Length: 456
Ligand SMILES: [Zn+2]
Image 1 (cartoon, rainbow, N blue to C red):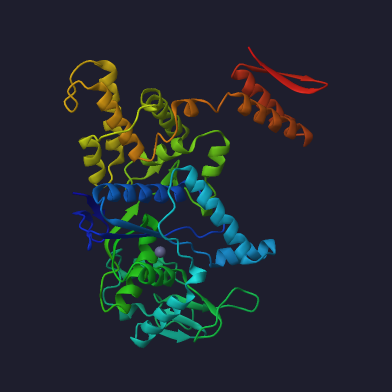
Image 2 (image 1 turned 90 degrees about the vertical axis):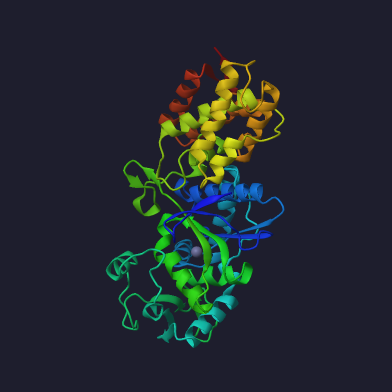
């Protein structure tokens, strides 16, 4: 039995899908106007793992995992204006980067990736229904959801009205009937991306996008709605209010699952604080995608994760050990305590510890009976390898894992980077690369024919 912490219930609950043949998950995806940082990668990796766990538990079920792409937004419009290009140039570029960066972390593409700009019809339809039911109103080209019309509003985030108004950074606008009312549709000025609607040319707000796309792709009530902790309020509270009111009180999701932040020092990693680290930067520094994935899985998903160099070093050391012992082992079978840990609200630190414990015991007493495998060392190694793979790790051969840094291709690439640094007269960087190679035992010799290298 899988147990998940449900934000609505404020406790762990046994997971029971509404239809065990068709399990539905929706996770709020990226707003595509910049490169994803490690904090953005955390939910992508966590929910990728949750999907794998559900597929393990319900092998005969179809797990439908939807992750949307927000490709209309004020920040996208501002980026497009700053570059003097169409918004689609910005959104295509950063969606491509997002898929490549998450792919490098072993995140499989979702079953469905609905795009906001392709779903304007369903959003307009839902807004019209909410107006007809008295939950929304039009004012000065805007359509607003009227918060006091929903007595259950605030149920997910459990905030009182003052905290809600503060948390939503409510914009005071003369056309609002209540300060907590939020925008579902807003007018677009000439030259700004927009669509015709019953309320004039405009564009949707962010919250209505998810409500409408969940309904059109997955249904009125889904099994699991996921995202980062920062989405509980106002985004998920607002999605929930819109869907509940449009659907006669039906719940939007049966379980609400939220992941904690990634911290840099004492602060949350965020674009607005300017303290971000991106997977792209880390990969270009030679870290492997699996190292970043293991680092992201090393803390329980609900806890904050402190992102440090030590964390990366430890994750790399663990994977080195796994690859040395398991990289070329054919995966087969299972270890019960590993799956018990994952079934218990995705307890990844425990699941990782189970793998390490099995490896330690096989190192220390290779011929002794193990309680699960009665001395069959090969069988045990196969089951441990299968467990590591179930985390989305151990995807390459031992040889591939240990090659890379320090091989001829890598050295040539760094020599090329040094030549490039010299041509732009960045001698500090050129010297840094030379010294870094020297520390690894590679000596560079500059001659008339270019730079050659030798190992010392
Ligand atoms: Zn959403």
